[in-house]
Length: 55
Image (cartoon, rainbow, N blue to C red; front, top):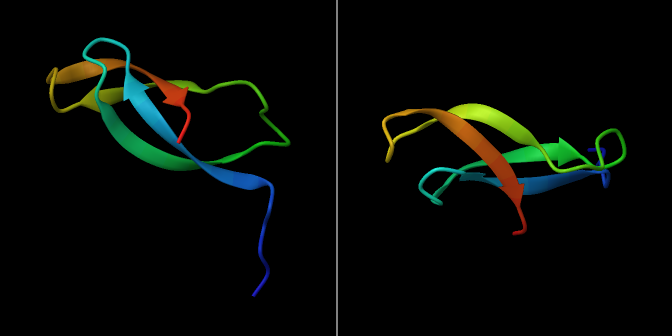
């Protein structure tokens, strides 16, 4: 099996309540800046922005 060293697992943290809700792989070579995605937060019960945090 091929192993891809460019991908790293990152955690996504809700900007409204501060809970870490999601973990996703990210390619560090193609997108070196921090991700910010609109996702559903089960604690806020609405769609909010989620920012990448350090693991």
